[in-house]
Length: 254
Length: 271
Image (cartoon, rainbow over all chains, first blue to last red; front, side, top):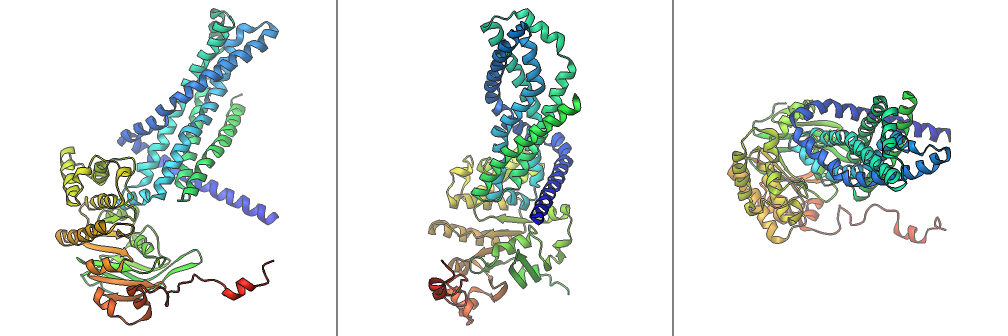
């Protein structure tokens, strides 16, 4: 049994090391792609970001609405229902915005990336590129990675903004909290530091989610089954990694 | 050992295994300039693997592959990419980039490697598409093409950088007789009109006989026979005869390796 555990740990470390090397190679090619082939990146920002915006907005609205309801009913016990705005703003900007966006991103854009790259591999498109003396790393992987990294903070910002709007809708328009109190409390308590924390998180999640999606797609076994499994793994591993990093960053910041 | 000037590609004493499976054992192949060379063999003998070795998508375990006398294992990435620009490769299923139109697929190498103006690119791409008879399909997407058309587009793309060497991986598989005839004619015409060398991997004896100047028959990880199609047909060894005449059983057994039939049916190890 110890032998099996030993090999499992060894295998994990090996994969982890390979992932880090892969990450470094992506970073190494990133500047030149960003400056010389920006068009490729823009296209991927469209694919990963613009096409995810509807799902992000809808979910943001509902999450904000729930925060409004829950916040109101709990805060009302202490006669503090005016603070529902602050409550929602903190929850959204520091935690829920980046985290839920990253989870939705993994489901919407990460799976698309992984299956697209996996299928390109399965249908020899990556080999064909190699044979045309075009490095798939630069032409396919790096633009998709950068597209995800750029999209994530923007999507998280949209999510938090719409979420706050949802909380306003429920708290102020539905339950009758005073508009002035709602916004004034947010202004008083929310610092730039809180917003930075959210931005840092969403940038880190953007790197993690895009890296894992591109990695899983690129290393997919080039069959229908293999691509399917890579797509599933993308969502599962991204979810675990995002929540882990969320804990890590929160622990460091606090 | 000096390389005669006419030898384009030389494979010397090549060994290659995939996992425990030995694919090539001491393989020697010489491909001459300006000719259509066919690499034949039963399925699973590693014909495609040989192509991938020649283009260094795979690295041999032992032995050398020389292109114009240069050992390709010693090239760095930049030199390798430079070498690959001399190759045009036609993949088995075309391997067109699915997110681009036919036109953009053919234009792809030009856009990546040259700084030609859009007008010039248009000109070159339409010429190449015309050569394979698909100028009218320029605006279609790869998903809308039939198998034969996709392969012709891939051929146009393989030619667009004017390579010295065109490589075809199983160009005849899964095509109707008409498309097959079209591809056979194109292979021959490209080779002679452009003065390039062609390497063809296939197991379609009839088509190969029609187009190849020289063929290598690979079986059991070695070259079983080589020569012109006529020479191969009159070859007397069992493997060659079985392959060239399409006999079901012979040195290449009909049955995949298995335990003894009677023993497996009557055996007591099954409960």
